[in-house]
Length: 292
Image (cartoon, rainbow, N blue to C red; front, top):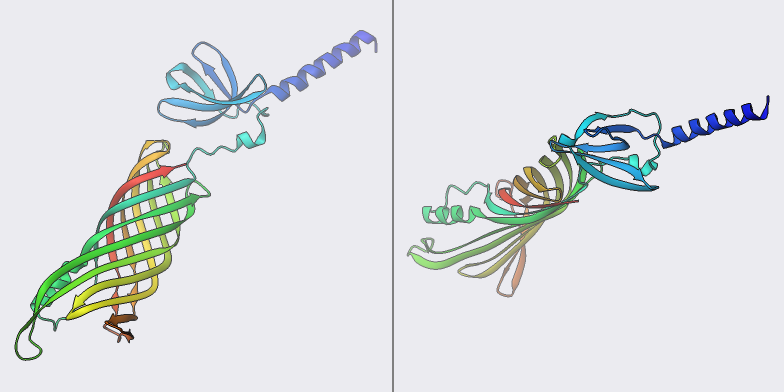
């Protein structure tokens, strides 16, 4: 084999190796006829997003679809892009939801109470709720999170008692708060543009009940229990990192005992079956969503 033949073989081999090393995975051809070796990361109704190498530098950019003549995924067998750049993630991993709205407590009112007292307790069922959910999605569809929720209800009235034979009118007031905190599992279903999403989650946590009220004299009731949460909502994307959402939440819990403080006396009251204090409530809310 002469020297010229050896040079030709080496030149061809060098060209083949260089060609393989410069190949990218996807191909974009513009309307002007330019070919772009790249990795397509996302396609929306308006743009195609892609990663490519320019002057040995990895860059991320986009082209309007009306300027793209052809997209050919997996056109090449090899890629010059670093492996970490080929791990495409076109969805937000973090979601912080801040919500507030109307809430209603479920629970049966004893039938043997006077009508006046029943009306008073019915007024206490309605309240407001606020809270936040912090979620991390390890895939597009599944994630875990942490919830903090506060329910508030307050009412006062003059109640007439007839237990002593002669009617006695007394001021009655309740200032109730129920706090819930705990982890949850969450599922998410994004639409095609990855901006809107249906969210569903459920979890278990710690629920605390506090009531500062007045009935014949000032009193305080405190208790805690295990609670459960379930949420169903929809996020409307405004930008890639910001959305507005609506949500329906159900939180449950049952107090079997509580601490009652009146004056200088504090005692533990154990409730009988059938007279448990239910903390069940539904929460309809709207709020802001921060995504990353």
